[in-house]
Length: 310
Image 1 (cartoon, rainbow, N blue to C red):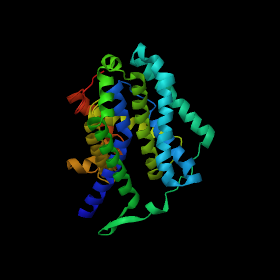
Image 2 (spheres, helix red, strand yellow; image 1 turned 90 degrees about the vertical axis):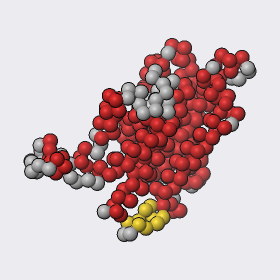
Image 3 (tube, rainbow, N blue to C red; image 1 turned 90 degrees about the horizontal axis):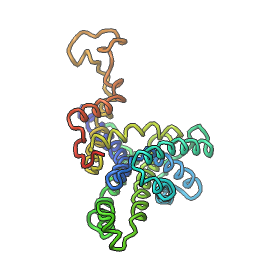
Image 4 (tube, one colour; image 1 turned 60 degrees about the vertical axis):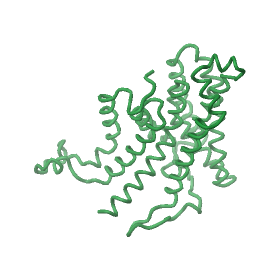
């Protein structure tokens, strides 16, 4: 029982930190620019496919660096040639643009790489177990994924709060007229912030494509979850996104391995498997994030640590 709990907790933390890597870029662009990017999960998918293409030519480790940079360049291009022209009309046209962009990106991936999953292979250095807990091995790749997420979180926080660049970004986003009067190029700051947020999604895609399957449906599979993370954590809160990601990751990981029915939890006789009380916790696992979303919104409409409500 202890072995199961420890391994499930570690797996849940790994999954939660991957969710944070993915949702932090969305939180960043929303908190600083007010742009709710519906195509954010598609940039995650681009990260996986770019890494697959690069890794087959130059190896995984250069691809780990180059693929997020390429995704960031694509994201900066979307801001420069799409979102910037719509900014003066408010956030609804921006949201609709990213909504359409998500479908275009999905079609583009299918045109280039096809509809079937691609053989994006794990590098030899990350294969096999890192350590053993009683009779269960913990994979080296999951530990590496956790390390990258923590490093990314630390670098992002330090860059925003303790550097001159971060100071200029915060000034440009909270007082754009004043920052422009001081000689800073505010539109360029917006472009760089959006590109950086997309690059974070691309980094999550490089690792997520290895952890799961690299296929055109991968953006659709995580798209709903990252919006749940951002809303539960609070729109615009990186700390809230981290807490929500970890909680969702741990809860879902424990839930998928629980074969208890609702009837056994409330202490009644087991009914037919087709009745509501016959449903198991594992069957409810995919729905749990959305149940938590509804519960949090009913109790705290702005999320756990929300700083923006528009």
